[in-house]
Image 1 (spheres, rainbow, N blue to C red):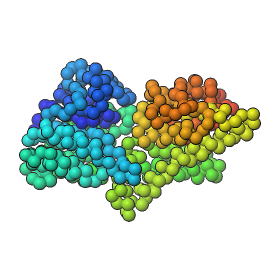
Image 2 (tube, rainbow, N blue to C red; image 1 turned 90 degrees about the vertical axis):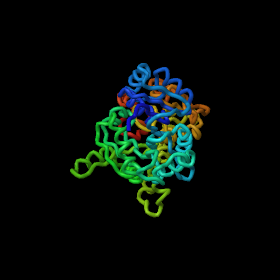
Image 3 (cartoon, one colour; image 1 turned 120 degrees about the horizontal axis):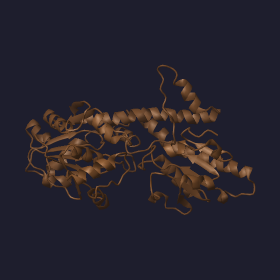
Length: 423
């Protein structure tokens, strides 16, 4: 099987870098996305997301004619589906994006094509995708009915990259490849070997799905321990940052750093996929999710206490006179990704309940997100925030915040959820 044309469905934080890396290997890539603005931006050789060096790779690929974006699926030899998999209000997985992507590519499938689901998914999603394809194309055969002899190969190959380092990790990280049959796995391996320098490890689709969920659940449990520890230390008057540093001197202890919660599309979502399918068995995983989901409320309480303390020191002021500056909206440092961000949730809650001005400081975005389009909320620069704010809330340890001189913090009420500002 040769891959002269590859199609990537979904040109977001994973799909666009993946498309760009394939195109950088001089392979024709057609990117598909429902967002017309994103398609137009990419076709101009530009990018609509923040990811180091991605703009250079995309510009070169478009200029050289190897990458093109479209809003409609076109024939290709391999299709990679990298669309969102959020959960519904009750934490049940929402596979509607995968279903839509499957139905969009079904009309252009031909015998010998490979379809890969990259989206992080609950166990069984790859088989469900194959079923949707089969229903749309009864003239073709699929692995669930024809096994190794199927016309179409289907596999699940989850991404496992770190935002801010996506291009490097796409190439260097090992890749778990779970085909619906061994031949499906082999076909997917040949595709990824076009750029992956790490090891391609073959398994079945369900194991590959569970592997990604397990990785992120493991991280979520460990973060929950750190977040719970921070709340305990606050109750005891203990510096959690110093405590963790001391505890980590033990040769077999490696406690993570606490924060305002857990965000992003993966860690904040994936454990719920396991819980939704095995709640009776996933007790620790569910508890960790509940701990991390509760942390934003705890942070808001700390801000309320800081406002009260400021008013007690300034009896001539009312709550409406107090200006709160929230530093960071993204779910992690030095990116613009706001998906499932606890920082955004916290800022939104404060803006909705505080009668005074709320300043949002996020150097990686150019306009306020829709969630913060509220009266009294302004997006402003770091210097402007320090010039106005009475209460400083650090939510994300962006590099711009790490260089703030301690003298700037003096005389302010500071709530630091990341442990980088020491007053």
